[in-house]
Image 1 (cartoon, one colour):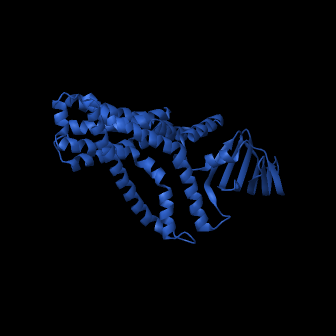
Image 2 (tube, helix red, strand yellow):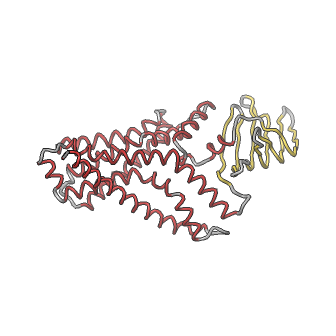
Image 3 (tube, one colour):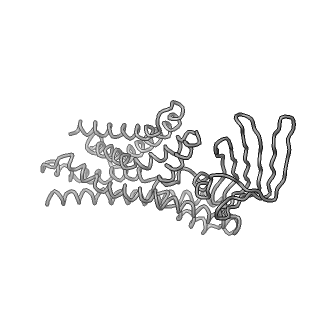
Length: 354
């Protein structure tokens, strides 16, 4: 009974600190982003609409700051108990370090569940809706471009998309058809419209490249034979870091089927899927700071070292991401490497203080 009460007490302190840190981080980000985005005011998109847009994006910001919030929150929660000698009393009463760490991990499980649910079901939808709503306010109805453009490959055919609207209309499409390494035709269309079953190109110019000449044909409409669906194009053209884990996995499988490298979608996929391990390793580092070399320093110093550790963790992942492409190792190791390094450092320092 006493052990359960101590676990609840530790969990309550740590979870309370994590919530406070997340609120502070989101509040600071909101203020800074609001001031920065005031430069984009135009049309019906005024100062109040800027605030609305940023509030819509809070689920995505929450996901972005979750790992740092857990690290700093655990440092503050454990540090406050260390400063009041509560942890010392627990250890003197026979409470093992492992059991204290289990009490710290319990609220982290709750945070992980909330973050994963938000990453899969909430933040991708709010990001998409917020972008569409913002552009509608800036450009007026009928000009809602939900996604930016980009290049895609389908077999021996390469596409450049200008953008895709909320009504699934593709704007400014160019198609390059190859036979081996020879370019055979280039098709330019002002729009590609989805009628519910198939695509229809409008205002089309088709240039065919023959051995000794080129021929250009113009069409008001033309059927577009492709495996792309509106859902796929929305996923392929949406900013990749805001997509749900299931969407990232589907994106990676699609790119691999086209013979392309899928490093970037797989990197974001593993980052989101391995979020529980990431948070657990950062909590171990936070606990090692409190029980180890930083147990006698001021709370502000612990927070400073926590911020440095969090930033180092992020930058190391960012450096390993392109390295996985250059050196050919799996993107999962770009995520697992810093995570295992943090976990190893935390366990080493805890063992020394044990």
